[in-house]
Image (cartoon, rainbow, N blue to C red; front, side, top):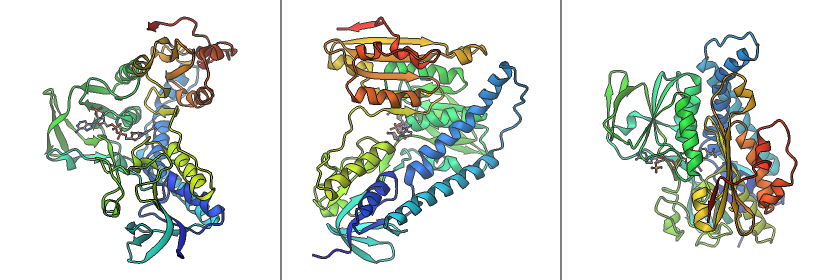
Length: 452
Ligand code: NAP
């Protein structure tokens, strides 16, 4: 059978774009449909603008420190419209790069929504249909609103990059990556930030000690964290939003932000009708080669609900291309993924948490918390945390968790060592780089806990 395309990709985010480019570069005919802006969540409304906001929010503290180091600086005021205009110009530039790279590779771009008609056919919003030998669904996810009266008085993370002004006083509900990162950003920019966290601690799923360390530091920096508190009642009161929490706490805010999780964008795509299996939240079920129950349809990235991180979606896209177009069956590799959470202080993490490690096998816990040289000099009290979990049986490093400046950069290199199967002895025989914070990684000699 003759198809219009060898591959049709639905979704122009990080994963879809990578798979489309690689396949087109091989000389295959590739089409890609994107209903919004090219670049997807990461580039347009996620990692990239978020990181630029993290940078913006760090300057007040840096200027304070600069004074203590002898510089004659005055803080002045933060100009939100200036920053947002600059931010949007940068996002336009990046979006254009994504578009140009696709075109250079020979991908045909359709700036429309596409849905599936059958195992080999997609229909675009304008009614045109295309057939393809393979279809790759890489449509990502979207933030969700909880089911509570007046929830629509709040905004979601997508909206935070385009606020008309910096909010004076805000409430963030939810304490995953997104809630905690934005709490740090707006606190650093000068907003008064409160968080409602329904459980006992922020950042569920991460190492308990690291979560506590970040939570304490965020509070020290001025974020008001209300744990055991979910919003129960929400009302508009004049210009403000009144919120009452399950612990009885009530307060008015200028802005309410929902950071209560994300769901896959599978609604209305026609997947279930074709026999593609979906999980409870709409995640597409795939095998280790990202293939769905319908052999010609594959899915990668956040829409599969596996590991919701940009670099993982990109690698899923590469493995898909290898498997389907290079005759080299390549399973996705989701083991030992290093990642950073750009809270303030930031965290870099890889592998098992202390709780997971000791559940799995007898574990030695190495940990140290100290005040970094640069901020100790200016009277800073915040401590940096280094933590390493080591198998008692094999000496293999099972997990590393770092909280503090540069943690995201450090964990990238640690990732290489752990992927190579590094042992504690390998770290120990590596010479320290002095004076750095990272030297703690090779100088922790005695375990603080022996979890037999
Ligand atoms: P998340 O990690 O699922 O966190 C959702 C938060 O909202 C949790 O604290 C949860 O509480 C809370 N929550 C959920 N429903 C609620 C309700 N009805 N009332 C009150 N609280 C509620 O979601 P996310 O922060 O939106 O992040 C989504 C994904 O994006 C993550 O999985 C991550 O992979 C990705 N991401 C990554 C980065 C990064 O790599 N730096 C940054 C941003 C996002 P409980 O803990 O009690 O359930």
